[in-house]
Length: 422
Image (tube, rainbow, N blue to C red; front, side, top):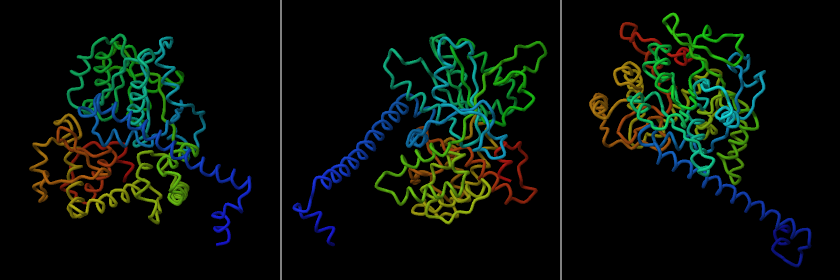
């Protein structure tokens, strides 16, 4: 109380106290200004992405999650997954944005690149944020750049219609989600490269395990060579990069962005949780869900345990409009349905015409749905339903698959991520 009285009583103030008080006020104002600037920049990026292709290619929720609190990653020339501890990568890392700038430079001789990363490490987030950064440049410095998510139908026609290809860089996002590539990735890659042969540069993002080790030629450091099926056919060489896991400094930066300076308690809890569960920093997609976890007594040794926590928290979060058990049953069945018929639909989504009947079988009325902003299930502008991240669908697929009687289990080729959930 005496200290409070002295602060209020200006006669007790001295020069040092006044300077200290002004310093505290300046720090608080600086923190507020920093938060406002970050929010302004985020909204600019978000608006650019939604205006350019949000409704057609990326749902608004995906754009928002990808740009909000984004921390620019590093890259490495070596696969981090081969290290005993994925965050302790032996190879050196450098800023990914700077490297892509260098590779897209007119003086660079290479034209084809592949960015590899495991599920949830931020491949699509990089593509979206790089695109937004490029669009916000001055016209003189801006590149002609297009982004095409390969998990959508009709991408071949879209690529063909792009004009001025010789002056354009094209990013082909999520090659592993291309339904044709899942059936025969060599054939599909050949088709895409023929479609893109006139573009100035081509960058493809893909899951690390999608290509076989045989396709990587050791003597060509940093090169992936894809041989065609037919003998004597043209092969394609790609300069390969790997997304590096977030290091401690980047995780700390994310936590500072996610929880503002007036939330010190949440910051401390988040830091403690990341130290306890290193998997969070390896998978930035999971790191974005840290608000759901900081109040939990989390004990996680395997990735499926973390997904289980996140999915169960989602069920509870939607309780206001749907029974959690009903949402669980619907979501798991939907995951099976989306993966089973991905080739027929040419993507891992369900159109509105089908979702009504499918939901009706679970006693649900789609038109009355009130999906929250943090939902793991998205509905885009065309009323198509898909999960917010492919790994969520894969987890739910495995969950339902293991619950089914052996005779009712669908026979499908599993993705590498599905196998990891076992």
